Amino acid sequence: MMKKALLVAFATLLISSVATTAMGDGNLRLILGGTRLDTDFAASDGQSVQDLVTKMGGLSVYDSKTGTLEVEKPLVNVLILEGVQQYKNKGVVFSNPIKSYAEKDVPRSFNVFVEVDEAPVSKDLKMRLFLIGPDGKEVDRGKEWSYSTKNGNSFYFSEPFIATKLDQYGTYRVQVKMKTDVYDNYVVVGENSFTVGR
Image (cartoon, rainbow, N blue to C red; front, side, top):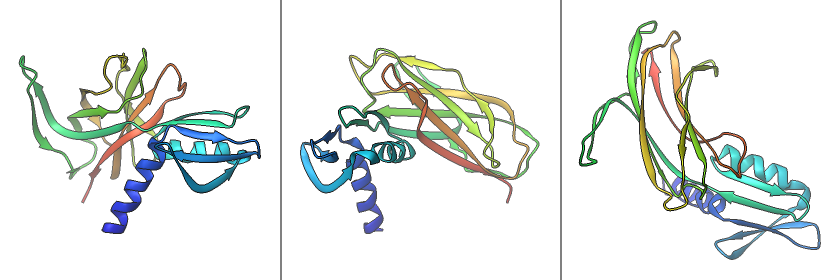
């Protein structure tokens, strides 16, 4: 358990660093929180490192001319619930987390609550929810949410999925994707799942 926690902590630190700098010798030197790590990457590995960052839920821009890879990793928490209610005083009430449904082919309604911290600073940050079936295909998607994070990089939102037909047994994933004015493509920055079947 401790080893897993250390690996998660290291991965978080690794991809939350803002810097990978190019040196004249054609290497990328990874800088973590202003401290250089002893691991060196060849400049030709820039795309591979960027692909790894994307798979770990980070946003990155690689400039091959300068050998610079800028990485940002938002902290995203995703809850799948029967209901989410927000009061005028901004209080939020959750009801019944969803882990599974017994039967398929029954229209299901549920809510997804997303909390984002340490989002990239952007005048036009976009977020969207995607429901992915056990076969890896998109079942449904939510609306595109837009935020300015110039004056704060923490926010939350919730979105209902109404009468969604779940026609396969297996694990469904709710993915949270993000892009900004700097990061052009949607990247999965968080996910949660539930199962259909026993």
